[in-house]
Amino acid sequence: MLQIEQFICRSDNFCVLVHDPETGRTASIDAPDAMEIHTVLLDKGWTLTDIMVTHHHGDHTAGIMALKLKFGCQVVGPKGEADKIPGLDEALSEGDVFSFGAYDFDVLETPGHTAGHIVYHSAKAGLLFAGDTLFSLGCGRLFERGPAEMWGSLGKLKALPGETMLYCGHEYTLSNARFAVTVDPDNDALQKRAAEVEALRAGDAWTLPVPLSVEFATNPFLRADDPAIRAHLGMEDASDEDVFAEIRKRKDNF
Image (cartoon, rainbow, N blue to C red; front, side, top):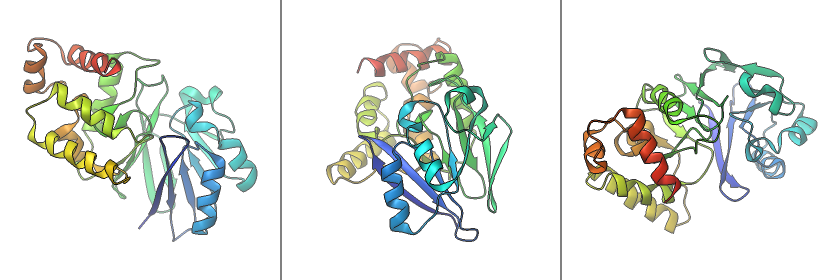
């Protein structure tokens, strides 16, 4: 079984370390802060062997070079953003597989937040490292691609098994929950999740990881095709892409 250590760095970035005790390999999902990651590695007695980059934004790549200098680790990341990611050793595209010990991670291209964003999914481990494409009860802002492309990217994640555990790049769930109920107020599953999130954050506990099945039932950004949301927005006859765009616009102004 893979061992996972999740912690907060910077202000709201999740750092995630994945350790394979059989091989001794340890991967960092992105590298927001080299010092924080190094501290946790020392505490766990792990040696960093890999950095799995999801996209080029500085709050996900700032620690790469310091960690590579310290550990000599391999850096893999999106081919579409290879020129923007320092220290990249291997560029990955849709359909590629990153092998991590006995666990394979399928690479999915998920443009939207950035043009070349990728995510990593392991069916065997039941894990999805989604970066800033999918958040709990939210999704990434559309900085480099439009709503239609992001809706298509989220469609790839909707096709994954519901028992898959979601890890993402930021602890945004409380804000996302407070917004989600404004566009889907009659969703009992969402109301339950929102109350859970309020309680977790009040106790300074993390809201992730979470099964994708929970997101499928509660996350409005995955449910632009849901009749209740469409009715609430008065968009019963609109395309899924247009409904998604409206939800994203409302969240941007929330």
